[in-house]
Amino acid sequence: MLSYLLDRVPGSPRCRVRLNGDVTLDNAHALLAQLWRDPAYLECTDAIWDIGACELPPFETLMQVTAYIAREKHGRGPARVAFVSPAFGQSVLVRALQGFERLVGFDLNFFADEAQALSWLERRG
Image 1: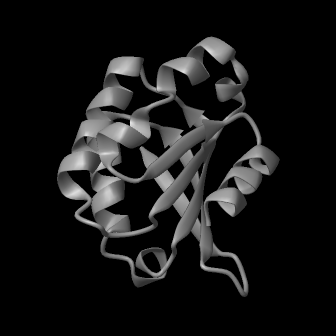
Image 2 (image 1 turned 180 degrees about the vertical axis):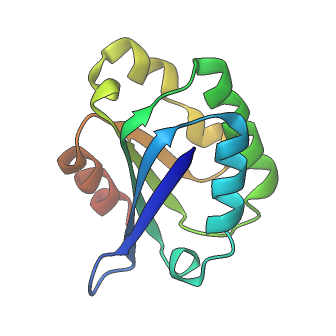
Image 3 (image 1 turned 45 degrees about the horizontal axis):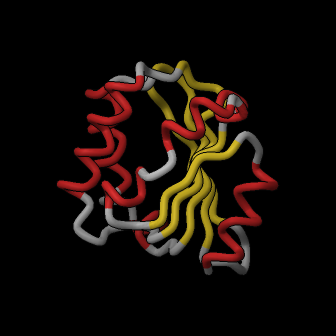
């Protein structure tokens, strides 16, 4: 099961999505389909996805989710997305995940903490 909490950052076009649970391919598809229908999410230009409380899937599943986003996003939702998890502090994992933005067609990056993510989003915005 995968649940989320969506918060809009007051006075900003930014939102924060906090995920909790197991990230599976089916859960990710259902969650993204739901968010792509949520007006609060669709109005955001930037998003921070806090996935630190999630059990991360194998790399292959992350690639499948990425392919799904590339195929189904169609310009919906934030143009810049920063994923945050302490697991991304491991340099090998971060290097493997660099370049996802080229696969999905929008700015996407991975960070070990929210301060790094915010700095990146501010530079991109």
